[in-house]
Image (cartoon, rainbow, N blue to C red; front, side, top):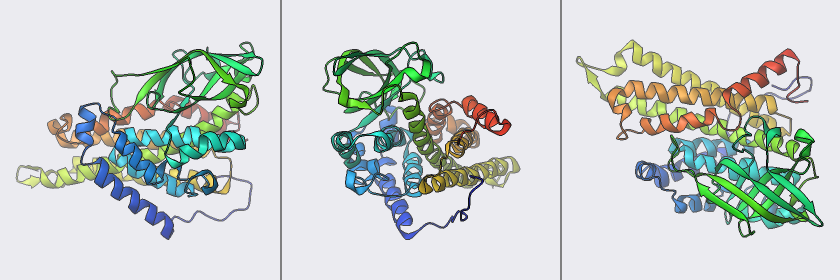
Length: 394
């Protein structure tokens, strides 16, 4: 919780509008995702019609102001949408993270009015899909080591480089990418750019052999002498690192909120199975070891949701929330992976089979421990903040 300022306490009761958003998102998941997700996952199919449906439901621009084509919703509502969507499948919540959290909300903060009209409005309406290109083959947690370059040439930049592990890269119409405009200036030499798929020199491809998120899209971006007009630079030259860090505060929030959905899905499946599966004349839910795992899931669900709501409260008030968002992302994703692990254990051999959803939950829950800041990075951030070595919200 932010300190050193006067503020009211967090109200945990949902407003009528927030409840309506929650119900609408839940109905969409129950109708459009859950009946199809096993087939989509096993066939490694990206269902474009579901993406379009999310756009029509207003999910892809939920917290974007109405003047830019969005729904004007608050961050609690956004968190509820992410939770419900990941309850269906993490691959579709990933779209919310990159399209909305990393790209659109960052464009809202740093974009010019012309950039917002050209890129943000169609993204918020769901007419275009956007992604976020920061990670490279040799630059993940160490952003300043990126090798992509942007060479100034008159009133344009020439971009070259490669981006790796970019969610929805192969499906995107718009790209927010980061490159070095000054190779010798470390993180102060990074700038941000807005690209269209139609620009010559952009190539994307899917990463096909990966552990999970099979119904989603993960890919690579290759930039070969891409000519980018100066007006497509986002923010000032050399301010790309600041922009990227702001984006991560937004993206990490959606990851944390989505992880709550995975915990719910694991808990719901486990409770159902524990009530039906009989051994030695009793449902397995009667056994203490099963109850212990169920209890751990409940604790993870409630604590994760509270941390997400704290971060949402900060965002709604416009309070800097790097610490709160980092803590929510770290805790919720760890709890989600533990819940998925315990759900497989409760299901026994069936948990190892795609016949039950917990096998997919387990595979999907591993990736969030890596992207948008590994668990180790978030531990480092929290420790250094507590020790006074850096101020996450300073």
